[in-house]
Length: 410
Image (cartoon, rainbow, N blue to C red; front, side, top):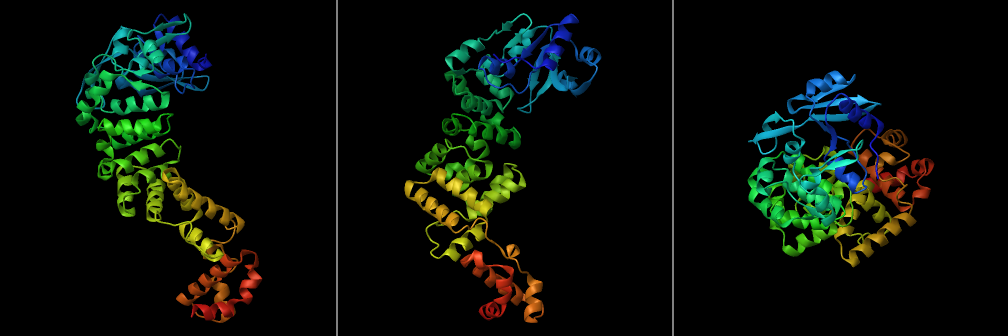
């Protein structure tokens, strides 16, 4: 069983030895029971934030308005939060007001799912589990704490978290909890798109990614952040969801969802979802190249030209996205094209005029020309010669060929 790090154990011990209750709570307890890696060892206590600030030598007031202090011990950051009750929600995400409480059970009752509403004291080896989170873990269920609709109308991100936990932990969503999600979509619409995107991507990384995408669709959650899927046929949508069983980076994964869009529309959607610029631009480039036929280039130079036009990076993303969705003939065509590029050593040959061993100044000097668009056309012909025979495309050979290249370019 996983053991907490030294800094977290020290913080827990110091609070208890000062006369306060202190427990590890939430995801760390759940993941420890599942024998999964634990990212954050969060502590809940009946000590007021002012006590934590005084008790620990190095602290960061990360969330005093919510009762949270970060203590730094043994170069580890440990979040310590006072037991609290969330009084009301109006923005669909954060409580309008909190009230500190001396009762651990009240603190656990405000949490989203039973598997996240457990507390553990390693010094006594005691688990406080008032909502049967351990039982639900054994049964493989995600169950809301208390009345599901209350939990989902408090915080609109919780429906997405339910699907994400089901995907990453390999669990199912309990029937009453599932039924409440479609009734809370208006609250879900209040959530910042960045937070929804994070949960979506985490669900895509889970062991049940394909199931999770279908669940988001059946629950109406895709309508909240990616309504464009509604225009797709059921067969195409199913193909996209089934492709999610293949892990992919963000750019090819997003391309599998947006390949029915035009490049400009795909870019607009990715921007709306607040992806980083490199992802937005990459997705638009992949969608623009979606119709590429890997069996089309006949000559060696054409194969290298195709790779140069796409760029190796975009070709790699396009290949990954198309392969995830593709029928077998398409897979065979990409495999054959990859083998051809490798045989031609195309990955290491010049792909653009900037990669050539000659430049515009060489053309001007050797051919006694003035700067003009003609210089670029000569370099383009030199690039085609390099694509046709990379081994012969040395600086000396291309300089010697400049008069012939000029004739071709005129």
